[in-house]
Amino acid sequence: MKELEIYKKECLLEILRLYKKANAGHIASSLSCLDILIFLYFRQMSDQDHFILSKGHAALGLYTVLAASGKISQDELETFYEDGAKLAAHPPCSGLLNGIVFGTGSLGHGLSLAAGKALSTRFTGKNAKVYCLLSDGDCNEGSTWEAALFAGHHKLNNLIVIIDNNGLQGFGSTIDILDMTPMKSKWDAFNFDVYLVENGNDLKSLQQVFQSVQFDNPKPKCIIAKTIKGSGISFMENKMEWHYLPMTDEQYSLAIQQITS
Amino acid sequence: MRKEFSRTIASISRDDSRIIFLTGDLGFMALEGVRDVMGSRFINVGVAEQNMISLAAGLASEGLIPFCYSIAPFAVLRPAEQLRLDVGLHNMNVKIVGNGGGYGYGIMGATHHALEDIAVVSSFQNFHCYIPYCNEDVQGTVQAMLRYGGPSYLRLGFGVVPPSLFKTDFAPIRKIASGDKLTIVGLGPVVLNAWKAIEKLEDHSLADLFAVSEMPLTQLSEELMISLNRTKKLLVIEEHVSRGGLGENLALFMVKYQLNCQFIHRFALGYPNGLYGSQDYHQKLCGLDSQSLSADIQTLLRLS
Image 1: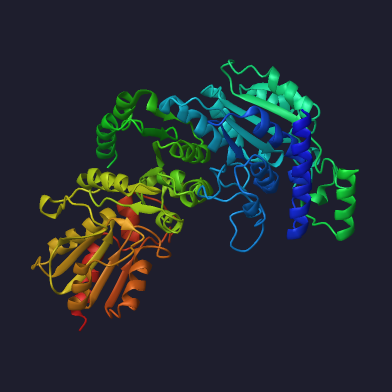
Image 2: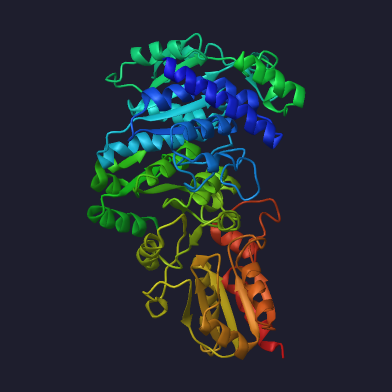
């Protein structure tokens, strides 16, 4: 776990540095799911498994983890947000980047894509699990629930959905906009095997929940991870505006200080 | 064309285990044979077209060849973003099949008609649209679509062809009848209405008749260029709105190649009187029936 904490800190610093360099937003979205990405890439997923980031706006979180795990180079990572780069604000399409099969950014696509990949193993005979990370906003989309119905009905037991349940979405709190509670009952009702992790920004808690997942259960799995948008940076935590804002020089210095102190 | 399509799929899926068939809960009295042959590779995904298309992209990313079947507007317009992003931009080998192109579903009404499908789909990256011009043409068109190996849309309709007009070898533009005074170009089976109009003329050899079966057109065939240069008179017909359809596509080439023709364009007008009827009824309202086309042909022939 100590090793993962080191990766996390490295990625966190890279996320802040590159968002600052790009003068770009979506910082809090990447921070919200960074622990989940770290755990999946460094502990959970095997080489034949697949990952789909349905909440494509957290792309830089994924890019830094891909770089830390050696799937893309540091030089490539440096091109984030530049003209002529593969590393756009949302993951690129067409398999341009190693480790990213599907470009995303429009919510509500990821779970169907993941279900297709999970279903394919029944015809190809491959032994692969498919992990798909959804946001709260993803769960507003009707297409997500079409996919959930399909996955539950067809018992896609190699499909693992993780919900980055930070309670904030594009223009306010989920509970005020489209109340998704009770989230667990919803996924239960769609015939998923549902797990909860109260602190989805804690690697140990994530380890515990993933260890408890019964992969031989015939149902698809759903892990609802309670997270904090902007996790790790005090002035960003649980603040909707950090979905969008870039950092000033002072804010960047303060953020770095909070991580390194 | 549904039955011809079903027979074709049943046949090719026997030899190619990569083919997976998804339907959005449609296919009664048409797809039962496909279901029997394909077994677990035939999946009714339910009335959930958005999921069907992205699911298919996921399958295609693993080397499988999914077909996604529904009534044309539900196959194309409901999940348009899924087609644009997950299939088109990613260049996935997914085959969309829309039954009832144009006014094919007649009195079922506007919800079941597909008048804008070619414009929408052909504007998406990497997509090719295939439009068989008669029932017998379905098998060759499906084979052409499979040879392409990328995002594809098959628009099925209905077309009974006189044997003399059937050309077995698929091409985006095919000359199916010959003449020297007038050029007629039609999108898919509506071209057969023009043939009926030609048959009413005393001389059946006044018009070159071309069927277009793939959109967007990326070039004009030499035969069509020769015809346009010779006749200088062009009638374009399509059961599709004008915007983004065959007429506009051809017009760009005509400007590019400085082909100056007398030009009549007949296309889907939507619902000009707000009322509904059979496919024949709607074709007549749009001037796409054989009688109206006869009048257009006479008009063009009279022009100097």
